[in-house]
Image (cartoon, chains in turn cyan, orange):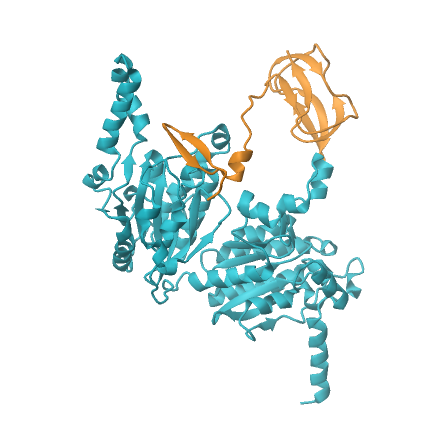
Length: 514
Length: 103
């Protein structure tokens, strides 16, 4: 081949790889951020990246844009592998015109999204952009819309991961919001619909970017982010970890690995588990006593901590774990924990990941704020998600299972496949004192020493109903087991449930309570 | 475990547990005063359409609040007599400011 032409190509590649140029790269680094290409290289297996669309150019001729050349149009796209398995990836390049999104930029993204969906491989989007390229007018909006449409089409088919490594503001936030997992990094991620300046002008409220939409805010308060990291490298390791356990598309058989027994320190579950239903403990230690290698990848770790959800393996097989957390807010269901649980169930169901529920909850959180913010419709999501899920559904009732909470946490009645209970389980229509106060109201009121009678009646009720045997007698609990036998019971259940297939009623889609 | 242990009373029992940030930061419910018409958003008063002592019907325009690129009509929430008008034309007001009060 003509060496001049090869040299010309090499020059073009060099210019494109430099993005916005040395100065812009130095600025990016001074802000504590990696460049788009460094991020891709850190996340993908070494040497696996194949860049696509490097020479794409914008076609805007307004406001002097015809004279401006944006290498790659501000986004790096391509394919690669993580843990040897293929993925599609794009990373917005903040050094090129602030990573602003115009039509060509968006079309590069939608093209790699189409590839991901056709090939049924995970899609990773690294967001670092000042927003719409205003000079391109409504073409920039068109670009966002086309991305949102594809996010929605790909939902439930391939895992979609959004990594917020810079600003992601205005309309741009809705692509991450439509994807499955949003990763954030402290002091780097910034997400909001309207920024601090607009809020100050319109509302007179003063707030900084970090307090308005930083990584901590989104992982603790809003729930928009599912993962929080202190550094970009930690964030990339979290992504690799997640992609090692979830199936890479909705047709892939459940992800299996070699079996590792739980760590010895977690095996004696009973020792960590207070049988007094009012004593708190960390439910994650129970989970660690049951799952392979005691390894549990929490999703939404810092959001609605009164519930715990995440991925683990049991006998090598990936499962989704859902548990009430008595250590935080007594493990009640409230608006945020309902949202967290329901969303996680739907993810697992879409990707054929069996659900294992650990239940210990006293009911719903009382409060005007909860009622007015719609705990009814939010709580309904949990019922809907569990009822709708057709993956294997296994439930372990550890301690309290009272009232509506008992029904919601994957009870037999929502079609759990196997329900196990520990001897400490209390499955009842409500807590013993509440029930005794209603049932024995007359006797208590008529008594001379009301408190003594009340106490006695509560004890009577406890004796009779605060146990797993009434539910077991009714067939709502399939087996009462010791905590230490939980792993074995779940392994047997998962083995039987492996070939589970449920025919669904034919419909376009249900109407999920939002 | 977190040291910040609280006692949470649920139905009949007291539970020892830690609160979430949101739970600690929640505000107690305060009943609103339905005799007061309050600004839902900051803005500038463009017009005041009623006078103190005047009787108005529900749905009548009380004043115009310019905000979010819109001349928002502030309508009477009920039939009644105006007790007090606390804003004037040209005044910039914040959020949750009482604009008009009914008897």
